[in-house]
Image (tube, rainbow, N blue to C red; front, side, top):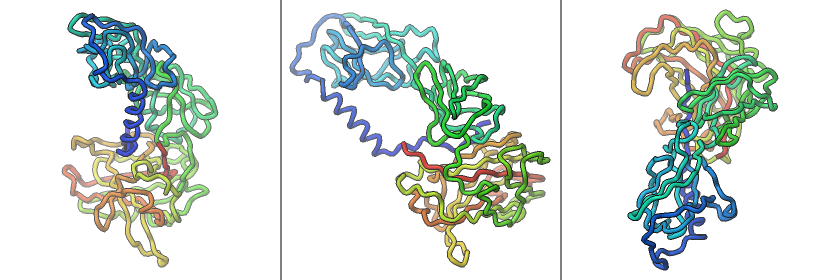
Length: 419
């Protein structure tokens, strides 16, 4: 079961800068339409090339979804319709001349990953006829946006979640260790893989027909960067509730990486806003510094979570806290983790029977005193305390008395990713 709060936060200014770059490339070769006389013949395609002028000499036999390309030939100014694998594509007439069409291959285009029997053609239509040109549409390189358990042991099965898992040739783990057992989903959004023996720490690489892709947004295996507390060497737990236990041979928790936090609560009534026996405060000190990353959407709180109960009511209040010299709380940001509550409002019994990596962008946290969203890491760069606190508020339709809930937490970290 996928449990992730990962979102693809791309800042508008980056998008604008990228588009300006595209328009600048258009300007390097487009000829004003007013200077040409439109031909009254069927279109002809002679070649396809990259949009980048530095690669203009290279003929393309195929390209990936979302790629900007230049279709070259004759009688193109009167083009009325363009099809990639018979999928109708939007094009801007301002980027069309008698000899060139600049166009982006639509993300929805059937490709050899989703439609093995696709015709692999570009088809142009005008009032005087049409033409087809052999051209293969690839899915882009695989993007691994989330790993179900970043600290899984060798031999365990994990799920890689992201995009473009089509025609995957190999999945390569850190230290150049190839996986021997993996299976991709038919929709191209995930890949089940057994962690190979000898896996190290770092990103995962995936080789497919679309090229070489892999880990994004800091989705790495066994990466200790930004670690706040691992309950082993970095154990600054203050002992309000629960216990720190070894996961080796524990009666409830599966084995993970040494020690972990374990807590349980029983008969938790609705309207309960604090369960003392489950409180997990961490005197973390100042957080890992990500003040060079402008967007809070690109810095993530991560930890491995185990739940047994089943969990179908109540919220895990994940808090980023500022304390003064007297250890009094000044203010805090919260995120309420509710893996049992789906986006459509329906409730499930969350009990995955394994450790799951939780990923929460800082932009999902809200300030206790105002309810405002966290905008930048700079807003919390002086914070020095972290905690997870269980409640069963009863404010969400469907919440109920919790007879038993058991939770494990390990490897609390803050990870920044620069796009």
